[in-house]
Amino acid sequence: MISTSSSQKKNLQSLLATNLKKLTITPPPPNHEFDFGDVFGPLTPHHPNPPLHSPSTTSPPSAFLGDPQVPFLCGSFSSLHTVSSSLPLQIQTETEYEAEEQDDDEEEEGKPKIGPEDFEILRVVGQGAFGKVFQVRKKGRNDEDGDGLFAMKVMKKVTIIKKNHVDYMRAERDILTKVVHPFIVQLRYSFQTKSKLYLILDFINGGHLFFHLYRQGIFSEDQARFYTAEIVSAVSHLHNCGIVHRDLKPENILVDADGHVMLTDFGLAKEIDEFSRSNSMCGTTEYMAPEILQSKGHNKDADWWSVGILLYEMLTGQPPYTHANRQKLQQRIIQEKLKLPPFLTTEAHSLLKGLLQKEPSRRLGSGPGGGDEIKKHKWFREIQPKFKPDVSGKECTANFDKCWTTMPADDSPASTPTAGEHFQGLLM
Image 1: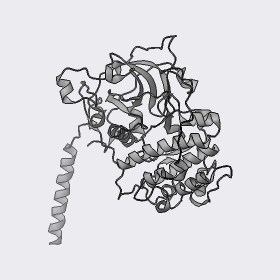
Image 2: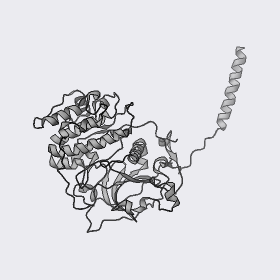
Image 3: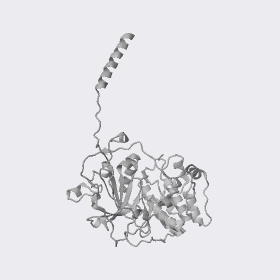
Image 4: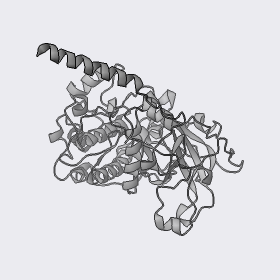
C-alpha cells in the first residue's frame, strides 16, 4: 500500500513538471496604459507641446490657488501622509474625452467637450509634488464661466502612482464635486489625458491666510474672529456632509478679494459617518489632534482641534506646540499643558481651552450640536469684517510669491504610465 502510494505521487509529480514546462505567460503589451477614467472620465487628447500663452503687458498677473511651497516660510512645517493598500485603477485606451461636469443631454445637444486645449495658460502660480498650478483663462467662455479665469491644477499620473497617492487624488476630486459652500473653493471641471489629471477650480486672488499671517505677524482678535467664524461655518458644512478635512492649516486657507476665507486642498479629506472612526496617521504634525498621533481612531472632532490650533496661531503668531524634532513635537501635543498668553481676552481663553481639549469627547464641537456649539460661544458675539487684501485686479499677484509667477508658463509633456511591477494589484 505504501509503495503504491509513493509510486502514484511520483507519477503525478512527473506529469505536473511536464505540463509546467509547456506553460507560457503572455506579458502585457509595452504601451498598456493605466487610466483614471472612473474618476476623471475618458481620456482627453493632448498635444505634447501646446502653445505657450503669456499675459499681456497691460494685464496684471495672476493669483495663486493650490498648495504653495515657499521655502523661507514653510520650512518649519512637516506633513505626514498615509497610503492605501487598495488603489483600484482601470485600463482605458479610448482617445475621446468627456468632462466630468457634463451629462448625456449636453452631449446630445452637441455642446463642446472640455480639455486642456480649451484653456489659455497665463502663468504658473504654484508647484507641488505632483505637478503645477496655472492661472488660466477659458477660451470661448459662456455666461456660466464668469470672467473665465480659473486655477488649473495639473497632476502627473506617473508621480501619483509612484507615491501611492491615487486615493488622495480620488478623495479630493470626489469631495469637491459633492460640496458647495461660500467658504469652500469650487471645482468647475475635471478631465484627463494619457499622462496627466486636471482639476479646474475657482480662481481666488487674495492670497493664502499663511501669507497674510506671516506678513502681519499676528492678527487682532477682531480679524481672527472674522476668519474663524467663516472657517467654523465651512468645517461645520463638511461635517454635515459626512466629510472630515484632516489638514486644516493656514497654507490650506485662501482669502478672496473681499476678505472672505476659502478652504482648499482636500487631498487628505475623508468621508466618515458619525458612528465611524479613521485610524490613518495623516495631516500636518503641528495641527494634528492627540488622538491621531496616538492612533486611537479619530472623527470630525479632530478638525475642531485643528481649528483651535489655527486660532491660537492667528492670535499669537505660532502654534501652541512646536519643536524641531517631530517625535518631541508629538510628545508635547499629547502631554504638555496648554499655555495661554495673558494679553488675550477671557473669552478667547475660554474658546481656545474648549477647542484644545486633549480628550476628544470633552472638546467643544464634539457634542450633538457639533459646530453650532462653537458658533454660540460668547467670543463670537460681534463679528465684523476688518481686513481686505491689497488686490488691484482680478489677475493680481501682489499677495503671492514671485518665485512661482516668474516661472515659464509651460504645461510640459510627461511620461505615460505603463504596465509593470509598480501596477500589480491596482486593477479593478
